[in-house]
Length: 68
Image 1 (cartoon, rainbow, N blue to C red):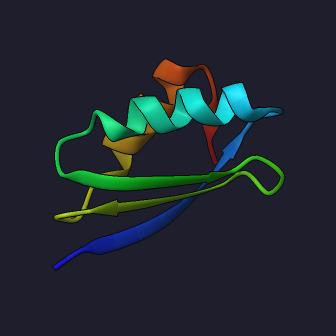
Image 2: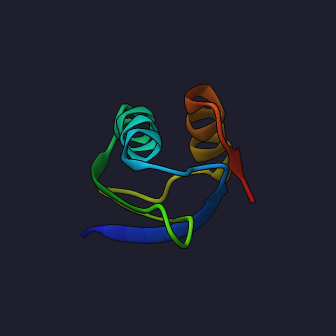
Image 3: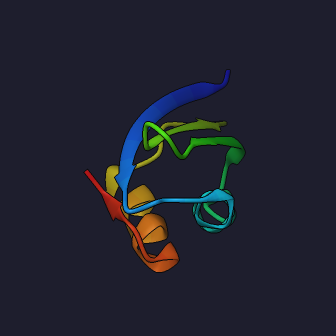
């Protein structure tokens, strides 16, 4: 059963920003899909199991952005 969570990320301004965030979050174990909307800052993550906010926040920080 897939779990979907939506987060808000600040600091993204372009497609490259979105790709960086998508790449880092995709490396979290169990993540099956990451959808990033640069205009709204919404990041929707689909995974096999519930993710911890800390894991997502660390991935977003690694990409150079901030999880709100």
